[in-house]
Image 1 (cartoon, rainbow, N blue to C red):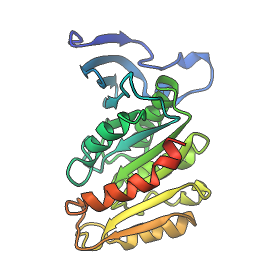
Image 2 (tube, rainbow, N blue to C red):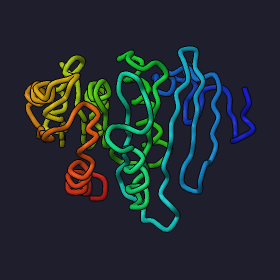
Image 3 (cartoon, rainbow, N blue to C red):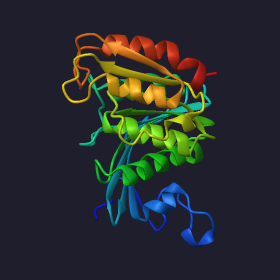
Image 4 (cartoon, helix red, strand yellow):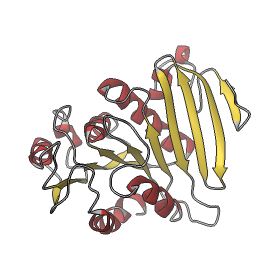
Length: 246
């Protein structure tokens, strides 16, 4: 593989440990054969991890040196078709640019095998490990769109000790049966009331299973939330600071 664009590594992969050394971490579970890491801008890294089950891609927005380092980080995942930009008008790109400037690392992932719930959960958990071990985050907010909502919920439960909050966008309810394990974690669920793929009741069901959280209905919007960027951004501007900056 061509690793000339960045610095390539082989073995356990970026931030990984020796699988034979003891407890298995999410990065160990990936089975990384090699990785490549290129800096696209002074504050944006492109990390690729090659595994026997596909390629995991991470866009990693790092805070500039001038920004005070915040205790939190954001880790973002897409839907059943994957992708790095998220819903709306490239909401994840906006989150990466905006919050990294405030000292909050933001990692966006592209799954190895979109729509494979178990593998995608490992992918997101590995990115959480990078945020904690590589960026020094004390707590992480997970965000997922559609299918990715179930990924975020499941990883939020599994890594409850380091997860500070969960955000879903037009989530499915399938795969969220463990939501009660969020245990009063800050939880907000955005859903368009004209979603043509998953009705808003999906988010309401997940919220009920969790026993915590808030469903934000977005009037007149569909599954991609193309009309609601302003509302979502405004709500996140209120919701995120106590978790990631406090």
